[in-house]
Length: 285
Image (cartoon, rainbow, N blue to C red; front, side, top):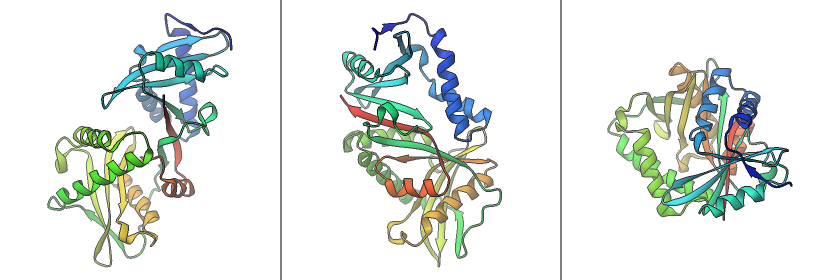
C-alpha cells in the first residue's frame, strides 16, 4: 500500500461512496426512495469524517462517543490492505473500539475477522398475509403494557450483552436511552403498535412495530414468542404477524434488527427471505 494522505475536501470521494452504498441497498431489493432514505441515515455526520487516499482507493473514518467510550468507525474502505491504517487512525484518536457498517452484509470481506454485532434486515410483506390456523392477534391493552415493557427491556439488554459489544451496565444505559427515544409517550407514542398473539386462549407472544419508520416501511422492534411456547412453529408465525401489521399500517416493507450471536434467528430470517441491508461488526482495540 502506498502512503496514505488525508484529503482536505470530500467532493472527489463522496460521489463514489454514495453510489456504492446505493448499489448495495438496491441489490437488497430496496425501492429507490427507500435506498436514498437509508443512504441519508448512513451519511449522518459525514461532514466530520476524515477521508484519506493512497491514489488507488479511499478510506473514510470517524469517531463517536457511546456510553462514555470513544468508538472509531470505518465508514468506507476501498484501499487494498487499508484496514490496518484505519484501525491505527482510530486508536491514535483515542478509540477503544472500532466498528464498521457493511451494506448488504457483503460476507465480511476485509472485516471477516470482526464479530457480527447486529444486522438490519428487510423484505416486502405479502399483500394478504394469512395467520396460521388457531393463531389470533389483538392489540396489547394499556393495562398489559407495563409488564410487557419490563420483559421487553430485560430481553433487549440480554440481546446486547450476548452480541458482545457492551457490558451489562453499558447495555442497561443504552436500553434506557433507546426506549426513551423510541417511546417518549409510552403506550400512546404515535405510529407505534403493540400486539398480543394468542393460541388456545393463551398469549404466546407479543409484537411491537413502528409504522412509517421510513418510506413505505414498518420497523419491527420486537416479534417475541414467549420461551415456554417456543419450538411449536410460532417463530415463523410471528414473522407473518409482522407482515400483517406492516400491511395493516399501510406500509409495504417490513424491516427489523437482529443482534449478533443469535444464529437461530438469523437462520430463520435467511429461510424466510429477509435480505441483509446492513451488517454491523466491531472489535476492541
